[in-house]
Length: 92
Image 1 (cartoon, helix red, strand yellow):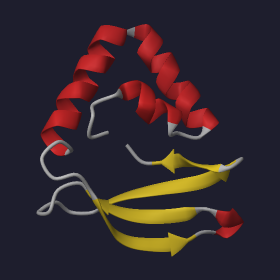
Image 2 (cartoon, one colour; image 1 turned 90 degrees about the vertical axis):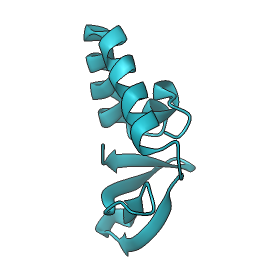
Image 3 (cartoon, one colour; image 1 turned 45 degrees about the horizontal axis):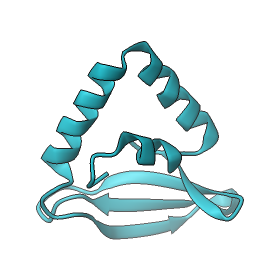
């Protein structure tokens, strides 16, 4: 996210979420990439992120409270294990 690389974000998503994002990207790639770059620069470039909370979920997943800037409210994101990697299943 901090790098503004949409392809890396999609790679970090679970398969259904990644497929939905790719479909949106196919519809209007210029707009989607421009919107993403603008959001990434506005929210993620200055300070990075911090994990403010963590909750284990049924099925082996995890819910994180992520702060993307020191003064920001936490954003809730969920991750599931896919093979040897963690993939985002809810967020953004």
